[in-house]
Length: 85
Image (tube, one colour):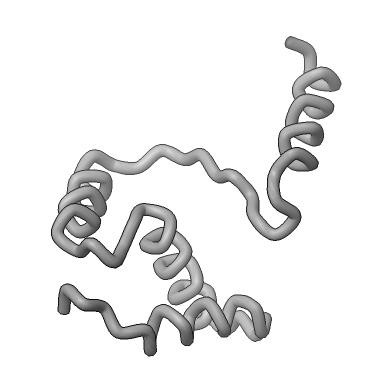
């Protein structure tokens, strides 16, 4: 598939998604994947999406991000009690 066709396909996929969510595909080390899987399995109030959102928001806030939406995600996960802890 040529570059233009791939770009158009990607644009179409983004339009079909919810306007405030983006699908992300990445490679993880096996160690991170196993740790994430074990954490999610042992903490029923968490899922892989909440974990990744929380980790990214924490990273950005700790590294100077001042976007209010990112801060809100960070604070919500920080102060939302988890039944498993």
